[in-house]
Length: 482
Image (cartoon, rainbow, N blue to C red; front, side, top):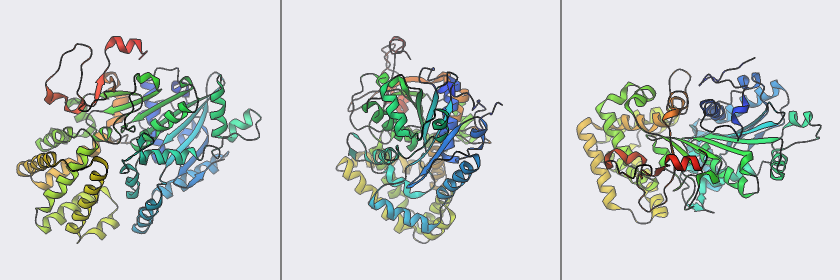
């Protein structure tokens, strides 16, 4: 029986499209990868079980739920995982923050398998991105370098790796008459070559960051690239300073919306190939809603396109807090209430009311300290320019409308998929996949958009969103098999 995906209507039964040998940018491949990435958020396994997927395991923080051979046990475990992710009350948030001060532990993932047409098995690891649990942001903000990677993303990846011997596949084990089969056993089999398994790793946002590092580690451990595939959406950078000569050294595809600020954050480099969707009015209206035609949204989007890396984003956050601090207390209270109400649970937002200016000052101190610890002295000239740009937006559109537009254009271009409306990455894989441009990382002190195909330079104003990527010429794509 054919089972369709909730978000793309692609057949969930057809796991063969995920094979490492299949065309990475084929619409059906990207659509199934997006459905798997969304599964890591919803934990809604029922349609996947209907489609023949099996051996499902869930990891949420320090809780691992595995060895679930029955449907009832799997669905009960999924509900338990959802309950843990949905703990948004103030006490749980406080305890979460306190726990993260000792060690980051908010790794979240779903693993599952599906038989392929040749008798082998697709093994899928889908990493979850950042959820509404505020303390998960501490991992994103650990932006110092460790072993060549973003420290927060690296630590979460290693937490998952520590569970490789504990994540079990009882149904495959029964099929092959094995007493026990773990993810670690499958990885060892892949290292030998000629394996009956293929490993596919997916994720969105923070999940896509973990996907990149995990694939890199697997390659370093001796698993051949032909047995692996990584597909990420809204992928942030993860590596500090790695000169990747060929994107095809890594079987990784990062799907990126040029309007998505998050894909320009994190480490300085992505691992693998980037496929970037250039901005267009048609796409924005279809995926962000009719608000994109409003002048305040267009001006705000232009401001966000000027933020090119993590340091820029931190300076913009400092400038935003400084400009808010110039407003009257009541206005700050109303503005923060309006913004916080759509970002965090009502109970926590209610507790913060009455402490608006104190909260602004505390947040500003933390971001300044973070910026100084990672980038050195503040670039005051850049900070002043960003502050002036924000004040100009306030003058033309008002602080409240500017903040609403900022929030809208931070969330909508980064959104993975929704049931009743077209989201950014959902739109890319269902309607705009053919417009994706193949890119690799351009490692330079001041990266620029280099049109390698025709050797011409387009006007700078139209290229600000892409200045961290370098498109491949048609000949180079052919040489690299892309």
